[in-house]
Image 1 (cartoon, rainbow, N blue to C red):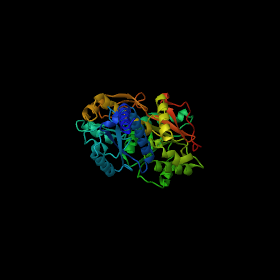
Image 2 (image 1 turned 120 degrees about the vertical axis):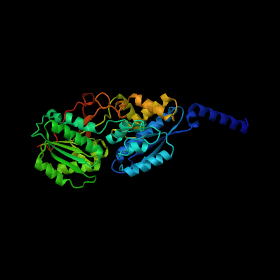
Image 3 (image 1 turned 60 degrees about the horizontal axis):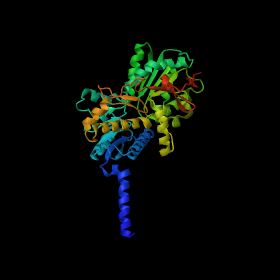
Image 4 (image 1 turned 45 degrees about the horizontal axis):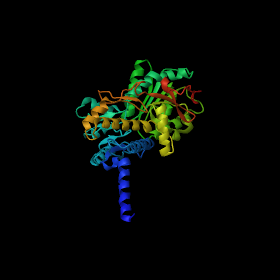
Length: 411
């Protein structure tokens, strides 16, 4: 066989292989923009979001892409969630021609207005009323904005409903009905804390400490002194920054280490951020917190195997899974629409979708396009930190079957 004929046959063979295995890549790519906190205090969460999207795209492309088109990612770093940075990243991603925006969280209270101004689907897990309120008030304008988590106030409602049962379950009797509330000056934390205060005061509890603090607190001594003097039986800490939260619980442990304090400590979502337990160490033992469902079920076990094969580590925290769910909801809506740039049709499909994902049974509330929160749809799962791990306590179907432990400071 002549070299010319051999080259011709080789070319035909390569072309045939491309038709069989690589035809998706002969089409224009679908570009997904993803604004994530890749640096700053939430970077450990942001890295999990990024990994979730990278695995999603790799698997989707290996299966032929979306409607035969390869999917590509374009990331933008929103750092510490500063509003101006979010606006700048939004402009850059939109300018790059993205066909959708998917994030874990990029919240700064401006996100809906930044990404809702463009006719592409925007799926976020910010869990902020500030992000869903504009949608509820002007659905015609923000039809493309979907929050695949519950709103922040759900934390306050849930805490008022279940926090006071924790002591009874561990065999502890509260010495009084006094509550301390420490909240950072950020809507995601202030709104649920205020909701919790409103409900509990109506139920007969007494708020004896109610402090708003700035980000970057280094000395928690004055607030710990107030807690000591007021002797609340329930301490609630509403602060997104894992560094500040870890610093608080470490100083709390040192302050009350010798004499103890007859009180339970609740820390909202923050211990879900993978960095928290590493920073807090043994001081975090016994802390109670609440977050979304993750690390649970047969679907998760299969996902974990695929994740570990790619990244050589286990998924860590809610957004390692929830961000993947958001991608799958978007991909399903596109495939149902039969087109990736018919954005209103895709939004209609997202709006009407019901998807059983890794973290929830997703169904969007038509009033504000956030996900319904309940034990049967997207649950708020209660955890206690035990032996350096987050242990699921309730709802019953998510429980690991372990009992609440008495924190070491209960003396």
